[in-house]
Image: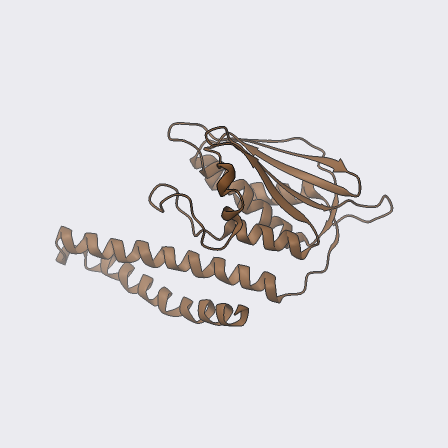
Length: 228
């Protein structure tokens, strides 16, 4: 099933890109010859092709986590978070989000690029899932828990009812319509799979309309380890 998912998502990307390309050409080069109804139809084609591209990209990411070998190393979560904030700079600016990172973040043992991917998904969700008119506010911090380090991502968003908290970590599980909160429904599944492949855990503490606190746990770093 993993190989099938990888193959289908990989092979479908090219025709989707062709569809996007031709739709874009029609809008840019032939807009004057198309009436408003035709232009609206083409824009819908382009929007849905872009959505399919994002979906296929996330499917590929999920498949790679199941297929590729991860080699955990000592890493600095502070360096990881700096990279995540750089990747999300546009989203943070557009939504005027306040992101507070309680430095220093404790180091862990993990796979650097996978941890970046996981935290990018968690932070992006924390910024996105807020009620209309609410300025996103996110706090990130770490705590030592015996042989583990737990990193928290706390937000002031719409929250998740307890009965849905396990469901949101499954592939394609969405609690809200695409039109309300855009996304593919795979981000949290990627987060869980990535953390589990590194021997860690992921979870959530939340109440509807009261915000959420997502957490990941990875092995703590020994004192003589070299950071990456």
